[in-house]
Every structure is written in structure tokens, then in C-alpha cells.
Length: 495
Image 1 (cartoon, rainbow, N blue to C red):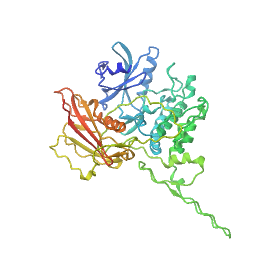
Image 2: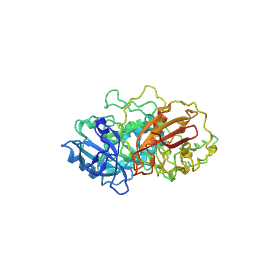
Image 3: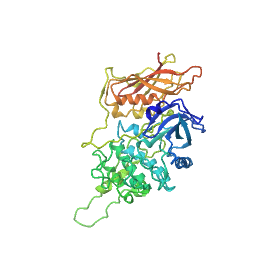
Image 4: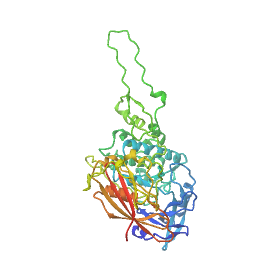
């Protein structure tokens, strides 16, 4: 099916939605970049699903109802219907165009506990909305945690009413709770899937069951202890034993200011015995991504650690980006992602999530302040970003008038620390008449798959000026990764 879907680029669905570029596919669906007729959504994603005559009416009703939901952390559905391509009957749903998904991040690194906290806040908010309406998300997994304009959103094309089970005969995954085999679907199913996703996001591995899922799971050794109790409760075999969304939200909300006061000093005692000193108040150092004020923290007994750490590490979502941060003033380009999350089993010993050490023969990079600013006569477009802090600075003006948007890979500092010298990756991109990148290939791949992936993902998000008087064009994007910065030069490629 994937090979067939690849060949459908250029087809037009119902004379409205052109399949501009194949994006990804699963066992039962494919996703393409398309153009939207909805105001404010020039680019969109269109998902194609083989039509089952027995389920067409129900699936279309689910999508049309989901399109009426309005929530800041749910992907907006724009249109849906039936179509036919090369004689094959299909269903289609058009939705917001997402930049990336959690499933794209996890093959390269696990989330930090504070990042998982950022993920939980909007996720629980969206699930609370659905559960109040007696609907469930239905397929919580990393590929359905999406980012649109620096905001986390859950996929909406999978949601369905409580009590409506999935397709009969469909292959169940580890994200499906045990009761799914009995045809049951309740809000507790989303809690189970959220627990599995938390384990995978924090460790890059899935929980395992040695004696069937009627017993507690075996969790990866590198799961942060602060999440262990929450995850164990979410993965309870009995749906009634799992926490509700309200329970989880209570754990992620900071304590009221009145409860954060220092403990009162002990009463004065007329005695020759030593006076017990009050337990010192320990100020928690906030996570660098957190915008919350410092919260006082006391030593806690072991059962209370999980709940309190969640409170202390809570970072307000705001408009910040969960997986990467964009420079100020730079709008993210569009990339959709709905690939199936690869399932893994936990190793006997926790492994490191750092990328492999990378060496390059070139000389070490100079500090960014010593780099000459490109002049207007230079043909190459140059942009520099250095670490999370420097990435938030406004980028310099692009010197090439043909480049409308340039995407610079966001590299965690711990990944930069593995670099010796410079890692160079050259990506050749094909640009259509509208200025969108429709294809990318490696002109010169670097020594690291990790940095090759970052360069390829960034290259697909570049935007160039439109050129109605010529067909596709090719540009060469030369990425250089260093310990202190990332540089990209864009030049017209020679044929």
C-alpha cells in the first residue's frame, strides 16, 4: 500500500484537494500535503483511508462531529468525505498541518521530566474537554501528539464516543488497554494509553508484561522515579483503578500560595531538654524551561515524592514549544507527521539516550561574534543559531531575496557536546512553483544519522519565492553543526 500511495502524488481528491506531497503512511492510511479551501488554512494535511462499506457512515459521522469541537489543544478538522483514486474507494479527512510529532523526537532522545510535565498540562486539558462531552481520543500514542505553531495538540481524526469500540478484527497494540479485547471503550482507555506514552516518552522504551496484562507491567529501568507511581496507576488492569483526568490534573497543579508558606517556628518550651529545630525549607531550582516561580519544597516521605515533584517541576505551557524552540519572529514552516510509533521492549539495563559521539575533520568553529556578516552581494543565505538560549534571538536578515523562510535545526546542548570540529551535511531540495519544498535528498551525508535527520527535517520546511514562469527548481542547503552554533548556506544547485 505504501508504494501505491507514493505514486498518488499529483492526484486531486474530488477536484478540490491536490495531493502535493506524500508525507507518511501507516498500515491502513496515508497522509499527504494539500491545499485547504478554509480561510486561515492555506496548507493542510489530508488523510486517506480505504473505505469499508459497513463503516463509512459511522466514520464520517465521527469526523463531522469532531469538526464541530473547538479546543486549543485539539487538531482542527476542516473537511471529510468519500473519494475514489484509481478505482479504489476511499474516505478522506482534511486537518490542520502539524510541524512535527512526539514520535519523530523519541528515536533520537527521551524527554526530560520537565518536558514531560509540559506535555501533560495541555494533554490533560484536551482529554478533560473530550471526556466531559462523553468522547475519547481513542488512539493516544506518540504519533498523535502533534505541534502546531508552537502549541501541543492531540490528533482529532481518531476520537469517537464513549462505548464505541474500534474496528472489529483490528490489530491491538500496547496502547490499547486489556478491556479493548472485550469491545469496551471508556475514558479509562485514554488513561491507559497516556501511561504507556509517558513511559515511552521518558525512556524511549515501552512497558512489558511478563505474565499477561492482568498483572502489573515491568517498567524500564531508566524511568524517572517521580513518574513511577502515576504510571503504575494508569496501567492498572482494572479500568476502575485508574486515575481520572481530574486526579492527574490535581497532581500537576501548583499548590495555592497560602499552602507554600514556611512552617511556623516551634513554640517556646521551658525545659532543659534541647529544643527541636524546625526543618529547613529547601528552595527548588526551577528547570530552565520553566516560567513558574520557585516553589518551596520540604523533605518528603517516599510515597509523596511522585506527586510533589510533579508540582514543583510544573512549567506553564503558554506559547512555548515542547520539543524545540523557534527563534523569535520566525514562524514555523509546515510539516505533518502521523507515522506509527515504533514499539520497543525495555532492556535489562537502562541505556543512554545521547546521540553517538561525532567527529569531523574540519577545524573547530569560531565564536559567533567573530563570524563576518554576509554582504548583500553574497549569493548564499546564511543563518546562525547557537543553543537554546541563542536560538531565541532574532535571526539576521536573509541576504537572498529568493528565500522567504529558512528553518534552522534546533540542537540540544548535550548533542552539541558530542561534536568535535564541524559536522557538515548537504541537502539538495526540489522546490515547486509555489516555493514549497517537495523533495529532499542528501548531496553529502554527514557521519551521524542524528544530525543527518535534523538537517533533512529542517530542509523540508524552507520556503522560497514563487516562480510561475518556471517549473521546479533545485537548491542546495549546506548545514554545518558545531559545538556553539549551526550555520546554513543556501545556493541554487547546479544541474
